[in-house]
Length: 128
Image (cartoon, rainbow, N blue to C red; front, side, top):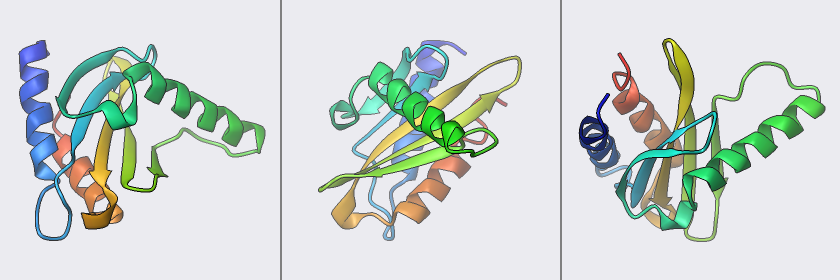
């Protein structure tokens, strides 16, 4: 998928988290799960760090879970900070490595469960 198309879809995902129950994401990013390379961004993603930072965080969490005896692959992570939620979902891709969909949300105005569901729904057709 060309970068312009990715940015368009990411912008749609970015705005899809809006609504009365869940505030719009302040930033969303699509990140290669194998390398940490950021494919596209929408909004302000500075609070989440770089794509490589997100990738390293998920690798550390996944490694820790496996050492603790957890089985299976990591699907998503929610990180809470004083003012934000940072949601990261692993999106499988047919014939390629998965990608990470990262979203930073305002904690005071966001229902994280609803926002995670809205992100998952909006991302379903990303690589169809």
